Image (tube, one colour):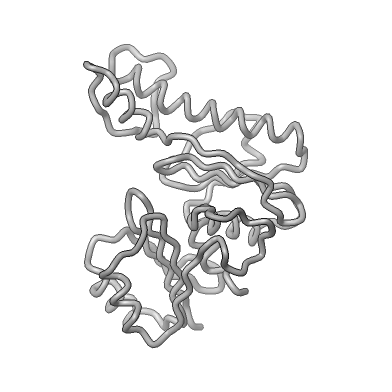
Length: 236
């Protein structure tokens, strides 16, 4: 069975995956040159096409490698043909890929797709597959960075998934607000949107995962490969 090579160029890192029949069978973060990555993956897998989404503009080295290929290359943009309706002009390709991935998993329900990365994005898709709208807010690391850069004394810390509710020093106090504040924000969005759309199903993806309140467990699905699943589902 031929496979698809999937590339996600994000603000923080570039990520690469291989899919087969919609399932992710290989994943890695870019740690070598594009030439090395393609040489290895094209040798290891029978790749039929490359699908790409980017929020960081052009990568000349990557473009050079892609131009030399003799297999189709699909670059996802807001203008690409896909299963979603009412795609806003300028919608980030990573958000669009995650939305397509969610829709490929569940149809006929209202979907809230949350991508918790450098920024946190929220996209709402109705039961007919139409994008209603969404929101964008700073991610956990951006919140910590903002506190550091806009004060005289607060240091910079790397984000951690676990944080105490009540901090007992500068680090734990900042981490509590950044991590738990983000979780409370996400929970608030989910509960408020569910009041309007009782059939709501929620997909969470991105670099940050959170432990949600008990009343939200059954409607939240965490899928770290949602962007890749959306890229894989293109033209299918």
